[in-house]
Length: 202
Image 1 (cartoon, one colour):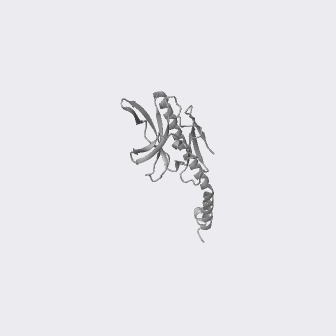
Image 2 (cartoon, rainbow, N blue to C red):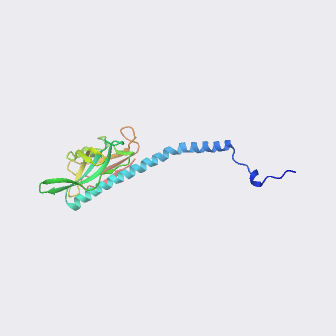
Image 3 (cartoon, rainbow, N blue to C red):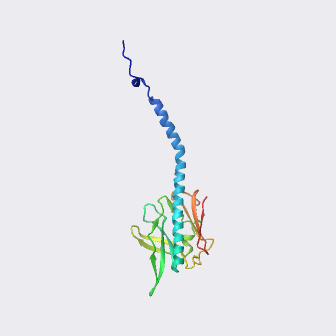
């Protein structure tokens, strides 16, 4: 007479075919969901980068009004970095001394996230070249000599006279986006009179 097997030993398990089917289903669902996750991540990075630049603009305007002096917002073209493009922003105060005006950094250069950059197209980011007085090359620690451009706030909170409604904005996009107008973007516009910013999203 045979001894019956213990109850646990007789319990059936998943077959190899069943496991392969489950893996195939998971892979299929992942393939459909992955683009949505990528889009969410890009959108989140654009929002963070746009808010950072907007905060720097508001900080610069506040400094200009409270310190009663000119303050510049500079954007840097990190051509020496692995992720090239307009990806840096920094606020500078123009201090008046006995020998003339001197530009003093009001904070360190902040980097936009690697997969986001300011679109350099003149039609999408005219603010990069709107103020002809704010451009040149600067030595930034860790980056070397890099080009910069930007605009300035006057002591009354308004921008320079060269800034108008037509050239007072810049556009951020995914660094890998193709074409003149990206599908997903973040545009910041500065009001030339009040210095306040407005955001545009698709």
